Image (cartoon, rainbow, N blue to C red; front, top):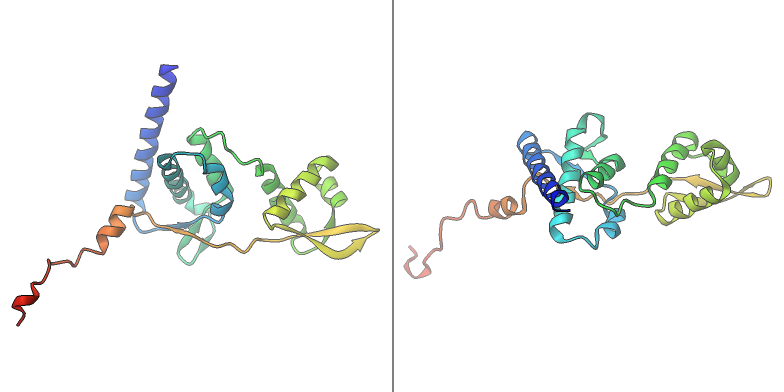
Amino acid sequence: MKSQKTHTEQKKVLLYELQQITKALYPKLKTVNPYQAQIQEYLKDLPIREKLLYKEIVHSLTLLNKQSRLNEQQKIITSKTDILNAMQLLELNQIPKQTQSLEAHEKLYKKYRNKPFTKLDAQVYLRKSKTTIRRYFKDLKQLELLEKTNQKKQFREQYQVKRKAVNYQEEETRSIFEQAHEQWEDYQGWTDLTHRI
């Protein structure tokens, strides 16, 4: 039991070092995590240190994989793979149950884009049971990634996959201390107003 804890502590030290190396390699690059809001509920029970480390690791993994990431206005976009890898590295048990639903969303989006489809179409294409498709659809509706259309196909309801409008939250490579310190760089001391010229 003790050796397991030591291993975990050593791993955390290595993760902090990874974060520092990434910061040194890419001091000015920013990342955007479109899944930030969705992932919050899975991290809410963690101590603040774990949350901050998790956020930094996601940022680092996004930067390390930047060649294969979408680039939007000089910001690199985090993928769900980065999020899951960060959770694996930190050995978090809160890996989202919606992971499979998100993977199904990616496949459905590639196949149908703006075309409507039925649950049966999704079931055949994804090769999943009726119950599994029902669960996927429920998750995707909650995440606002799927909507029911007004159209019907042979009396079956049709759905459409959509890309969620994301509220991007920028994450800079600088620490909170560095950002706060920046405001005081020009500070030269207090001016004594009694001796003004």
